[in-house]
Amino acid sequence: MRHQTVWILDFGSQYTQLIARRIRELDVYCEIRPCTDAAPDSFPDELTGIILSGGPASVLGDDAPAFDDAWLRTGHPLLGICYGMQLLTHLGGGHVGRGTSREYGRADIELSERPGPLFADFDANGGNPVWMSHGDHVDEPPDGFRVTARSRGIVAGIASDDDRIFGLQFHPEVVHSLKGKELIRRFIREVCGATGDWTPGSFIHEQVERIREQVGDKNVVCGLSGGVDSSVVAALLHEAIGDQLYCIFVDNGLCREGEAESIRAEFREYNLTIVDAQDRFLDRLAGVTDPERKRKIIGEVFIRVFEDESKRIENAPFLAQGTLYPDVIESISVRGPSATIKSHHNVGGLPEDMAFELVEPLRELFKDEVREVGEALGLSEGRVWRQPFPGPGLAVRCLGEVRRDRLATLARADAIVQEEIEAAGLTRSIWQSFAVLLPVRSVGVMGDERTYEEAAVIRAVHSQDGMTADFVHLPYELLGKLSARIINEVKGVNRVAYDISSKPPGTIEWE
Image 1 (tube, rainbow, N blue to C red):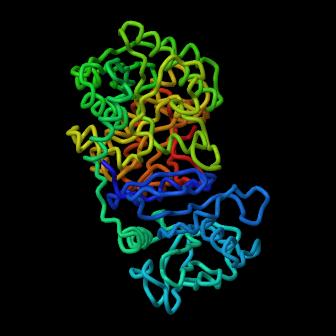
Image 2 (image 1 turned 30 degrees about the vertical axis):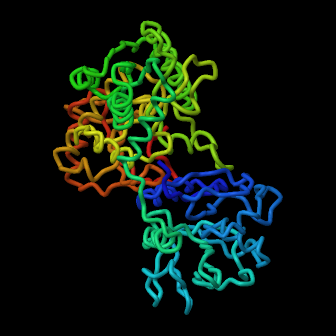
Image 3 (image 1 turned 45 degrees about the vertical axis):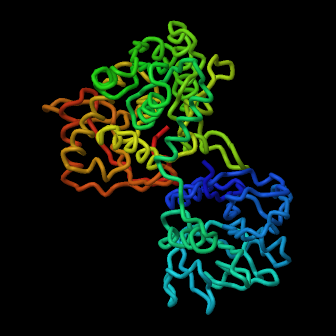
């Protein structure tokens, strides 16, 4: 099936996939293409519009990505965001200034007398909050363009006189831009004329066909952790290839408390094998404290375990993974010149000489999109809405050396956090809540005796996609109950703290 499509040219912004996500929320399919691609001689009939993303470079700098300016003359509606607007201006003969008036974070914009169709949902009297992140700025738009909005005197929006090409200095794709979704909807629906025909159901249908085409009559090994991502992958593969799917749960000693028992009870019908590999993982992690080394070790051992187990399965050259886009964009630059944040065990941590070909049907989706696909596949509500759990497991929450005794301490503290968050009715409203164990000892008093034990940190965040996050304002009564239970019930912990940092500048996980 050929869907109405929007192309996004990626100049390296960490937010590029958020643009795609906003478009998909409108049931419109979009593809991300490298900004260095040459404009084709002819375009598919289903293409309805083009978006130029933001990026870390300066259009005035020597490191500006190569760009074919024929993209600006295709006749399709076009929207340039941040760097994209500066590029439109620079190549169109307008003036881009450097330096003195930088804006980062929240800003308010005021509309011009003729703001155009994109700003129809904004307040004409001002006070429209948006999210800025730029150094360069537009001083004068190109000929044939007008200024549509300003922020503190800086040009925040431009539009061509025929309202077919637009530029925005701010990022409408992030949640901090209050009317950003509406603005993108105006561009997609009214300017591009895309009505939307791409849904979770159509995604499932197309992925089923792609999986069958990739796999053929061969078998697939799926790493099933029981989390949302791997469960949806397993269900999608089962829909596509049935008994050709062989699921393996690796009990690596880094899982949540009671995880192996839960997996055994829920996934028997998926040709499930549970592998006890605790010694194999923990022996390799002994004495390792560097977070990147932990991740890479775990990624490599996972693959080796799968290779060993797959030898017992005939004709199984494929490994299915629940890799999502935040994993990819934080690990490697896959489209444009984006920055590497950290390696994920199933992306940047994969060994080069692994024996599998990967099957990753969710690689371009965000977590909320995966949940929608899971619901469409008929997975249970409890499974679909389970909180995210990191692939490297408790190893990235057990700061310092990863040992059995410390993991047991952390797993029990984490289980208490899950129990109390669920009892408070907050599980669905919180993106992630968990415990972290610090290799920091402090003096305490228990039963009139001196203690000298480690500290646990509680982390709870709100997020929509894992790209940005803010801490949850948990009630003091709940925090007090969590602290009391952990200190009283978990041997080895005598102090509890609460993490109130956001992402950015921090990350959701501690390592």
